[in-house]
Image (cartoon, rainbow, N blue to C red):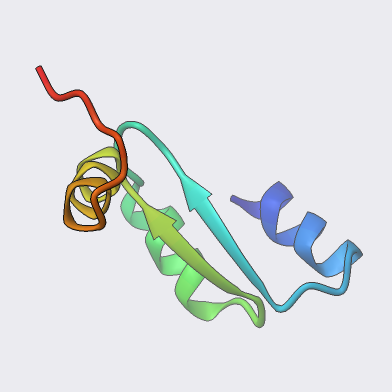
Length: 61
């Protein structure tokens, strides 16, 4: 998370999306809430929900 936030700052980006197929630690969630760059955290469960909600091709088993 810290490397990602640093990369955003290096590119002068104010927003970023960090996607994982699992979940995020409490520390990662807390860190993303306090840094100046806006980082959206998307878990695997949320990604699957968003894909279904927006009719994006998804194969769920």
